[in-house]
Length: 148
Image 1 (cartoon, rainbow, N blue to C red):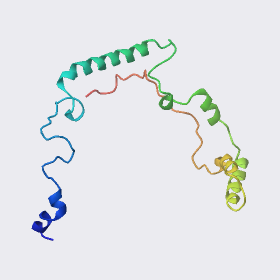
Image 2: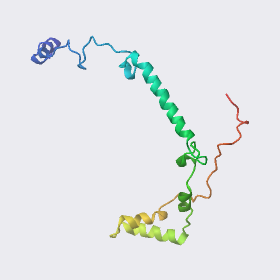
Image 3: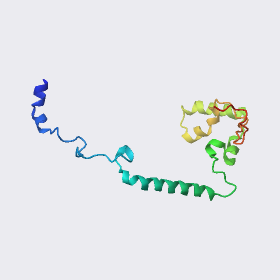
C-alpha cells in the first residue's frame, strides 16, 4: 500500500489529526511548576511552606526520643540484635552435620515433609562458621584520612 492509498483509506479519513493524542486542548499551557511543569507558579510558595513545616515536624520527632535511643542506629545495618546473636551462636557438632547431610540426600527419595528438610539446613551450609563480627564504630578517628 502506498502512502497515498494509506492517507485516503477510510480509517485515515475518519481519524482527525488536528486532535491531540493525549486528549488535552492544544492551547492548554503548562504552568511551569510542580511535577513535569503541570503545576502553577502561584502554588509554589504554599508548597515550599508545607515542605518546611514537614521538615520541622520530622526534626521535632527526633528531639522527643528517649535519651537512650540513638536515631542514627539502624539495626539491620549496625549489627545484629541481642536475640539474633543468640541464635547464630548455636554450635552444631560434625556428627550432627553429617547426619543432616545424609537425611537431606535421602529426603528426595522418600516421603519427607519440607519442614524436616528445612530443619537440617545446617547440613547443606557450605559457608564458614562465623567467629566474630567486625565492630564498626561511628566515633572512629578520621584525622588520618586525607580530605579532598
